[in-house]
Image (cartoon, rainbow, N blue to C red; front, side, top):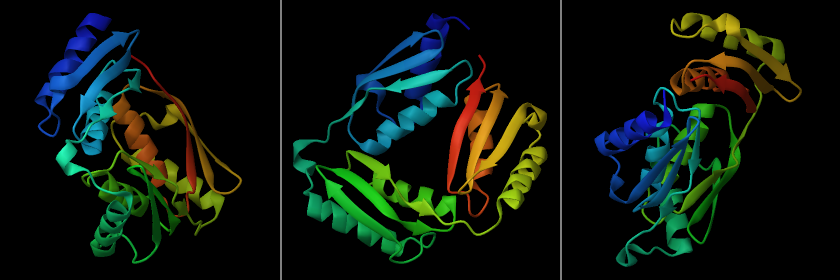
Length: 217
């Protein structure tokens, strides 16, 4: 796909996605790499824009240069924002109580702590990024290992075999010291890429996933 057509696909997708106000987002395309510029009115919209672009066929990479600009009347102090994040985490049924620590500096939320599952870590990040006043999120939550490395490798391989759209034989999975997963291989789209990465993260005890997957256009 040529860059002109890909750029138009991205513009159309951003305008189609109801969670994004794309009026102030600029788009360029070069050799399958999309650059997003401009500004949006919340961090949640910035993340949604990235997700919308990554799911398109032909996109090989994304440079996210969008700024978050909240209206002046929605300014939230760091201590108030930290309290909001902690309160919402407390009420989220997917996240163990008091397991996540929160630090906020100039609107940027830093999450730390220890959890057992990746979906809990992702849920905590989703809670933070959807609040008004958040400029960005650093998710430093650690996943604790609960099973042996050999069992992790087999569970990931079995999960990939169950997904019809993934060519499992083209993907290499290695478990390194500390229950770190190394993924290698070529996939046909960012959707396949994310499916494989999520399969790796879905195994209990995976502490990190090194993404060596290549997306072919």
